[in-house]
Image (cartoon, rainbow, N blue to C red):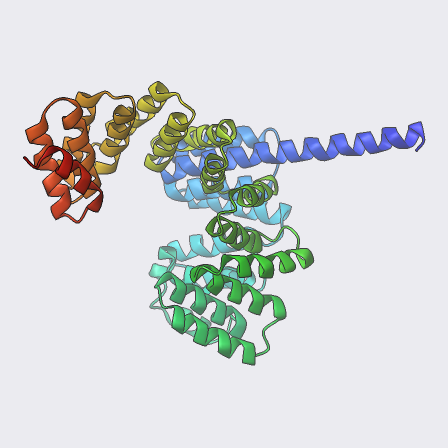
Length: 404
């Protein structure tokens, strides 16, 4: 390879890496702005997006700012933003425009934009549209009823939506019946394989699902829908390393979903990659600093890494934010338990039981803590409650300490 060719390849690699990093930077802005909007802080979301737009113009930034403007009730600004999004990425703002005009009570214009969305790559699913509260202002109008007389969704789309619904409702047999009907129709091979993979994951056949999705990914590399179900199958098959790689693919491709950070962090926790897990959790907490599940996972990862003091800080913060959640007391109590701080563990286990007295494991652990504090009679009281609640592990403690 010539020196000139090496320089060209190096330049291409630099540009690709720079583009990826810059694109990820944009996603970070989107996620933080979305969190502000979800938290009822549209002005902060708008200010953040304005800063991002001063660095780069991307359609998703305009749609994110439009959502914040909608929350403020500034429909004119939102319409302008959705139109700007359309200029940068054709059709990306059509669904948003449809929602705004519906909120304004303009059924004709709302359905005009909804029809464009239905015929675009940004087409929304039937369930999402019909349950969207933005359309409640026009759903009793003649124009709305007329609009839905047309078949906007293919038999395949409806079948997959039906399968997803049945799976979410735990009706696996019904989902299998729909799949059999789908196989008789003109559904594409990939659609059928995807539907099969959904059912396989729901029934614990994760290895079979992984084979199906891996084959589909070869034809459609980077497809978000396929990657999500693949990661779910890998997690179900206890392939945490594989799942973390798949979640990394989704994140690096620019999918703006903060939840992926938490899912990948949990995979890293399982593979013992503590530093990577904590990096993802901290990034998530920058976006949602009061999230109960994130603080809980952060504490557990820190505890596994051997930093019990840091773990206690996360658990205590969770308790401050969620004082009526018994699990938050249990998390901190377990941390005290591991560090043999028996009195503190007893106190938190007791608080948890005040909120949920039916947890037999908590009665057991509180009993063990009391036993280690020299309070045998109180410990036996707790052991017997745990036994009555069906905890068989407590039997040895009772026979060794409570039978005279």
